[in-house]
Amino acid sequence: MRLLTYRTDGDDTPRLGALLDGDRVADLTALATAAGARLPTGLLELIRAGEPALATARDLLAGARDTRPLGEVTLCAPLRPGKIVGVGLNYVEHVAESHRSLDTERELPDRPVLFSKPSTAVTGPGQPILHNADLTKQLDWECELAVVIGEPASRVAEADAWRHVFGYSIVNDVSARDQRRSGQWFFSKGQDSFAPFGPVVVTADEIPDPQRLDLSLRVNGELRQDSNTRHMLFGIARLIADISSGVTLEPGDVIATGSPSGVGAGMVPPQFLQPGDLVEATIERIGTLANPVIDAR
Image (cartoon, rainbow, N blue to C red; front, side, top):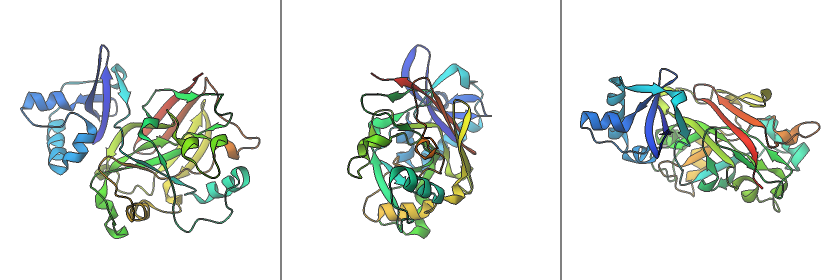
């Protein structure tokens, strides 16, 4: 299933839906009401309800007839995670460009480099990335595969990690490169709007091999990043095992699995986002997450 959260004109209430046939949206709440079925009304609650709720959603969608075009709705971030765990330096070529441009270590890390982004950084498809020139002159992009946790994970072995995955989405790990503070990345990566997320969450059964997905990013139509998740230094199962060794991952938490090379800081000369830019992050089998950049002052 390709699950999403959306609003309609004249109604600000977020609705739980699914994307069908590429460009048709089904209202899961309305389908459940019509069928007399019990179903959570939000994606986070659906994830927490587990497999019985997912089975109900699948059954409802199998008979869905009343749908509307995607262009008639406004997509929201699929959910607001309790935690966003970011992974730094997780593609070999990005390690090299970060060493050249951001003074990080030359050597490949021997265990995942982790940081956090607050849930207040989350923004949805089409929503603006806020550029505040009083805070940054180096606003950068990072297209990343997002892993959405389905079952609680604590001290999980790598071999068991996959059963804790609910699905996959896209995160643009927006970063103010000049706001790193003594090596700490929280303010650099955690400001409001610095975690565009969406456009959908694709359930794990729809993506048999998440370690073989093309991913790319364009700024104003120009290709900046172009890679594949097979180039991750630490794969998804390793990340879940490492994080859960000391931090419990809960349903709806998101792991942003790292950026490939091609960030603005690594370009010669460096290029950074400006108001008026359009950033489009694309991952195979998931879709495209597009966000404009606006002046936030």
